[in-house]
Length: 293
Ligand code: 5RP
Image (cartoon, rainbow, N blue to C red; front, side, top):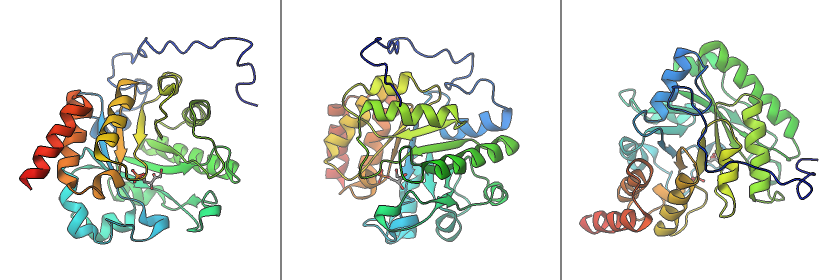
């Protein structure tokens, strides 16, 4: 079992010591090939080392979620305020104009819509099609501790092998099943397993306690997952804390497109991620932009 020795021997994550990136701006990426580094540089801004990713892939198992009913009308106009967009190939091809130059993070897994069987996923995109769509990254849910954990891991390692062959990084999304405890111990395990098995980026949830140990013990960049819609100030505060505790960006969906003022929220998140604004400064920006309409 993981971490059974805790208590017998204190662990040292050296949370105050940044990882040595060996001359490349992103953690864990210095020995990757040019193409992969170039793609990562389209997702993460080289000047800040961070990303604002916009997640609109929910329809792949939820159908038209609130806010995502009309991607063409309500979502495409928001994309310009992000660094990267996370979506399915169906939405990319049908609803996003090819003049869009944002880094595409392609949802590459799929499976049941039934909540209790969500972990029963398979790879849902061929690597050749990902290349055809000029994606910057391929991504999937990884259900560590879930019923279909082994399959989920195999899906990821298959994408990693394809990705290495063609220079496309993989972002593993640490999925949290109903019965999984959302704490730092679980996310340390899940994130580290994904990185050890080859993911070049990991997306995971923020936890208020010891999130810095999750980021410190993961040798690749961590992007914070947004989660369900919460109050704007709370979402900005969570983003700020995640960045301060070592995340290399955020990947938000509902907290942007379900906000009363999505453009204002996008801009406020950007100031946290790229300009190191405090939650109060970012919230003030959100409020003033919202008031301007
Ligand atoms: C689950 C996912 C989602 O499909 C999506 O990206 C979630 O976005 P948000 O929770 O911010 O609305 O990757 O983890």
